[in-house]
Amino acid sequence: MFRPLCLAIFLLISPAVAQDGSQTGTPPDMAQVEQAWARGDFVFVRKGLAYLAQENGSALAQYRYGRVLLEGRGGPADPENAKLWLEKAVAQNNTDAATLLGQILLTRGPARDATRAATLFEAAAARGKTQAQYFLGRLYAEGDGVPQDATTAFNWFLAAAEDGNKDAQYALSQAYAEGRGVAQSAPDALRWLEEAASNGVPEAQYNLAVAYDTGRGANKSATAALDNYRRAAEAGHVLAQRALGTKYLQGTQDFDPDPTEALRWLQAAAQAGDPGAMSNLGFGYTQGTVLPRDDALAAQWYQRASDRGLARATLALARMVETGRGVQADPAASFALYQLAVEQGSTLAAQLLGQRTLAGDFDATLAPHDAVGWVAVLLDGDQSDAAQVWLTTQADAGVRPAQAALGQWLLTQESRATDAIRWLELAALAGHVPSQYRLGDAYSTGAGAPLDYVQAHAWMNIAAASGHIKASETRSLLNDLMTPDNVAKAQTIARTFFERADAQVPQTAQTVTQSDTK
Image (cartoon, rainbow, N blue to C red):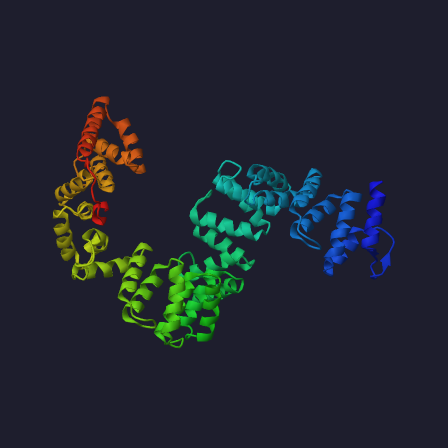
């Protein structure tokens, strides 16, 4: 009953098509499906494959029908039924179906099954399916669904790459560059990177451009770098678009700046959400040498980049707000932006705030605790002496972050170990957990303090009690190096510390100020 009904329904809704395009009363065959595919008639393709998959049970038809359902060609996407038809094709040893089903099983979600995917890839890879070999290499490289094995991953990448799989060629170049599963080899890394780039892998084109641009991994060549940046950029690679736009913004020894090309590629990257391109547009508009000077537009681009967490853009915006360039001057907003830039990782912003701290700009408005980090950044620069004086003054006044920062820095200075330990102990005894850990580390390694496992264990124990993970791990290692008597001594020191701390806890309601929490 089923087959005649299936055929009748097919002929009713989609008459078969002969090679000359005329309708026939015969069931479709794969050749007609191929012709419909070529002319873009996916409605016919879908219905024809449905008939062939059901009527003839052809593994090829089942695979292609599953693929059409998955991609939503000729009708709505139907991933669940797609998997069912792919399973039927897999049962008939169709390697294309096994590879596609394996990829589906690697998509995120509750149905993800990397172990089954690996099994499917294994079967297809053993029969020479290069895409399956590549995915199997990835699973072994990542230890996903199979034990992690860099050598096995490399071998599968090599098999696929030698058979022309471009993704495997790129993976192979990375393996050679990093020495994963094979001896590190810059020439082999470059050879496979060039192969992948020539086969149109945008990431390979971008990395090849960087190698030519910097001379790291390839002979420096500005022309080859520009060509590969452009190839990757035209393929939609966002970092390549930013790099290409920036080169046209700045110009090189080989070509002059080009505002049209600079805007074209920087705007493309910015519209794709790249904060670096947004910041570079801001820079271009503030400079006014290649792009027309437009401070208001520059501030907008810096703001967009800052909103995405780019520290250098936040710092540039802080300076504009401070001086009223392109926006209304606002000292409070500017200060907040400088602080945000520090939080985003800008050392320069911290240095600028540190310099203003030393100049006394914040004496009336800011607690010393809040400025310690900024001043500490200056310890290794030209203002080191002034930074030491300021930090020592605050440390003498009992500011724990200042004691900790001074102690940590002094540990790096020859012949200053005694002072370093003194400041770290003051901070540690006052409950500063990072100082407790650093003190324990100094005693456990002998770096800046006498080697003393008992003191090391005690301080690691104290820091671990406050949740310091590394301290807990180091304490466990020290246990293996110490006698039971010494471990007991260390535990006694730690217990005494906690008893004293408990005794100092106020028994009546107290007012806690912001500086007390630092």
